[in-house]
Length: 382
View 1: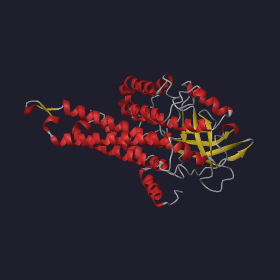
View 2 (view 1 turned 120 degrees about the vertical axis):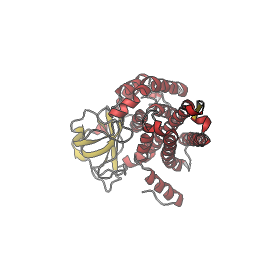
View 3 (view 1 turned 45 degrees about the horizontal axis):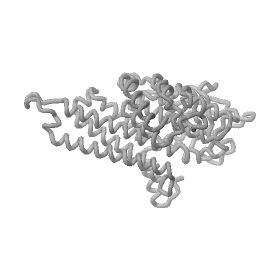
View 4 (view 1 turned 30 degrees about the horizontal axis):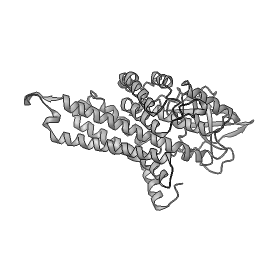
């Protein structure tokens, strides 16, 4: 599979599986297992798995293409996918240990969905600082934690879990573990009923004295924080930017269609787009924003492929800019389409809610602005 083939496969899934059910899944807060199976059959769950582990071995550009394509049809599914890929990167970085190797093989075969379980109730959106602490138990550890916002909660085959290491000196002295979905003591704490991204099952999860054997440790003790920032954050923020791009493209397409098809009968059937220059100007601004975000996504991909001194700054900027752009574009679409948007005829109302949900996902836009300001001033981020 190459990048073009991956994008074509994503487009087919978006058209045949995601688009027909997106509105119903959003209304019912229903996780789309059908979408996950389709992604698995198409080889997209293993998109970034190394070729040595029988994956497609593709990089950030293919990931961004696929994620944006999925998001244009259903941002909830795109979020499930980007969390899966972000977690997969941690597993792939764990080295040649038997368990990660076996998990990667299942992911490459399309029969294993994984996700991240970082954020906790006690540290809220500071995902990098879990308050839970692993305790030594035989050759492994035992973890008790209250995780929040776990995408694919109750549906994933594994969870990449962060916890303070047993001898932690502080909240960033963490280790990452791979916890199977059927682990004893792991459970979904509450149903998911959010305002946006309603179909991605982002429920809180409890780990109640979950025993994690030594072979399920994904990083050295204390190296989890480094992996969060250097492995997870770049892929996560790229994925968030691609989701925002997909939402912008969807809003532009829906607004364009509305302005073409909706007509003033008392003005001899002239369309809204023909009659109202202010709406044409709004549509133009939306398109400019979407194209600008596409350029930013492309720039971030280039930085991830060839890292340099500005790479982390671009990583931080990408999610903040994408979240704000998606909110701006979908808000403009709501105004331009008026009652048709508010009555949920166009799908724009769902895109509007999904865009706002992305902005409060850790790291939040406010946190990213603080990090970017610190980076520019030479102040340590943590």
